Length: 113
Image (tube, rainbow, N blue to C red):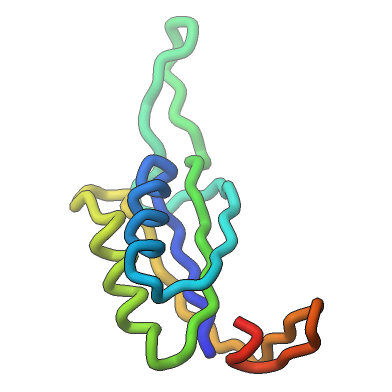
């Protein structure tokens, strides 16, 4: 099993949720609001006549645990759903998962996803 973490633009979250639910590949996901920066480095705003460049940008982190066989398909789906072609589209990280346990039933492994 793998955990797919995607850091994306907040305005692309609904597009991603629609794409994931329409395919049936994903049974659940976790969404967090996060702050960070990468190559985008923020954008200049004017506040009370002063130029301000924020150090951290608001993004959304989406976490999905999937079977190994579904990883490439999920990554492709995420990429297509959130890509704008501009700096700041985000990143996808793939992390190995050693074990999953469903608390309610005690199921373990792939059955617990």
